[in-house]
Each structure stands twice: as C-alpha cells, then as structure tokens.
Image 1: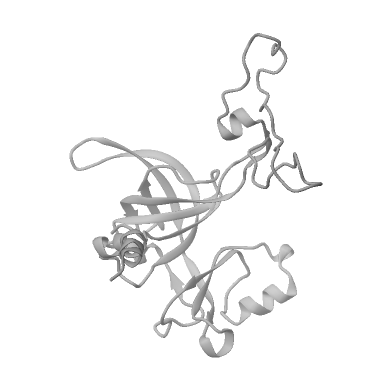
Image 2 (image 1 turned 60 degrees about the vertical axis):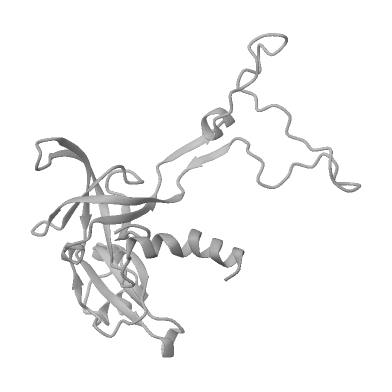
Length: 238
C-alpha cells in the first residue's frame, strides 16, 4: 500500500474505524428550545441544550428506480392551513400528513424498513452517545474585519488616528496585464457575518425525554431559540 493511500485512510477512514461507527445513520428534524443545566449521577452540574427532536413524518421514500438514489424525506412542524400551498398539500396527502414547515432528506443504503407516513420520534437515539447538530447560525449583520475575521487593526498613532479598525492594504501587485492590483477571490474583508449553515460535531447526549420528544446534549447548538436543526448520529465518534 502506497504512502498516499495510507495517509488518505488515516485521515478520512481512520476515525470511522477507530470509533466503530455503524453504517446506519439515524437522523431527526427538530428545533432548538434553549439552554439549561442538569445534575449528572455524580452531582455535578452540566450545561445542556434542549432540542425538540421530532416527531417527524416520512413524507416520501426515494429509490434508485424513481430518483437515482435512496433517501427518506422527513418533515417536521405543521404549517397553518392559511399558509399551505396546493402542491404542498398534494405532496403531504400522499403521506396522510399535514404540510410540514421543515423538510429534509436522509440518505440511506436501504430504506426497505420504512413506509410513507411513518412517525419517527426521539426514541431512535436510544443508545446513541454522540450526535452532530446541523443548523443556521445567528445572523450578525454587516461586520468589519476585526469582528468578522479577528484582525488586530491599525496602529493608534503615527497618522492612523482615524483608521484604528481599518483592514490595511487589500490590493495585489501580482497578475497579468490588466489584472494587476486586483483583489483576489476569498480576500478577508468586511461584509455579512453569520446566518450560515454550520455543524456542532460530537455533542454528547446527556438525557432523552421520550414523553415530550426532548433531547438534551452537552454544549452549544447553532442558531437562535426555536430555530430548526437536524440531529444525526455523529460521524466520527460513537
């Protein structure tokens, strides 16, 4: 086995092999309720984020024959009747369900054990120790380079009295004729901060409330309170 192959396996395959991750990924849709704290068995307080995980409805089952891949389409949260659209009503009617406000897909190798209209609850995470939570971070509006990228700013003297939070030079001397001093793509500059999809990985499951469909995980979860999130079994830890 070549050096590059061993290196590739160590980086991308190694974490899965070491953790013994099951190929069957479990996922639910839900919303972030907020944060609180719980006492563990040793009497120590642990900060946790409370997530309402499910119940989710299987809205559609995609197969290789019909869609080219296998997946479960899950829906969470009912939409008011006055805001439902006819195509959405027709799609939800096939699952004998109400139009859902948050719909996402879960890719699977085999979806034969599921039926359209099935209800998935937080019980699917029974025995799961770590989960990944995917959400949209809080939007912070327009931000400068110091807040957005952590720039230290310009000096506070020597002619820079009015440029404390200035990014400095942004041009470039490299490039062909006509493109000299052009700003390169990806340059760290001021702009819109936040409101981007991000994932909190390997969040430990502290407690599960099956009766109220609540999942308590240790650590922060992206997004504001009542923001929609996806919860799935951790990819690199078990």
